[in-house]
Length: 165
Image (cartoon, rainbow, N blue to C red; front, top):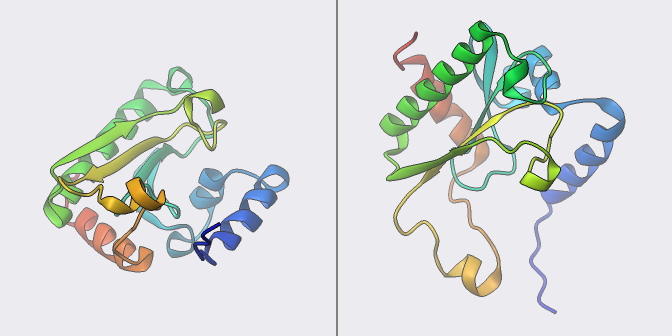
């Protein structure tokens, strides 16, 4: 058996086990400090935060501030705010990272892939041609080439100069 050392995953394991008893990562981010929770932007009804365990560099999640599991439970103002923030994040990532495309989506329910199914959130995952190299194919390992704190700094800065709505 080949071993891939990933000591940063232990923090995820500890935090994940606490979540069942403690609460919701999005609600904690809404009431917590931006840098601690990787919140890169706050609008009236929504937040944008980096995924601490991203699928790709600059993987952002946009969530309503209110704890709801499905989009149909949002008011029209909340829904509009959420999707305007999704657009704002994409615009900021376009300028800062110049990806060739995006995966943008919502996973409703655990069987659909939701890691946090009780709090609606939209994933925005930038993609580049060639960003899938031999590592996932040969070693079943994804390489993230940028430190999360540098990503936080870059995305937050890009959002402060984005077109606001």
